[in-house]
Image (tube, rainbow, N blue to C red; front, side):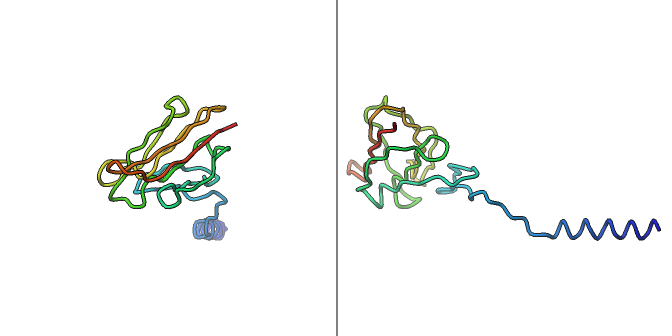
Amino acid sequence: MRIVAFVSLMSLALLTACRPQYSNAAPPTVVCGTTLADGVAGPVVFDIAGHPSIPTVTEETVGDVLIVRVSDDCEHGSEVAIVPDSAGRIVKSAPAADGLPEAVVLRPVRSRQGRLEATRDGHPVGVLRFRIR
């Protein structure tokens, strides 16, 4: 009787261990090897290097932040400025191989209008305008 109970218990354990695990969570947001977001819902990533004419952003994404790509590759990043600097702050960045950010996580200040400007070698890369309500 003990052997039957043991075999039954082991079979149940093996079936449970081999069962595929599913999740409703979004995969982490990883840019150039740096995890910028890891939560249940996937954030919106604004790509100003590839799409310089993004309309003004009025809502934050998951975590009350804006994730912005400021370069189109992991070799060369961009210099980043928030104008005015009181409109928000960079809370995390994903560096490119040259040490400059390839992507940044911006925490905007509510009821402030601002823009995030990206430049490389003195040339404009893109601008993200934001006014969070």
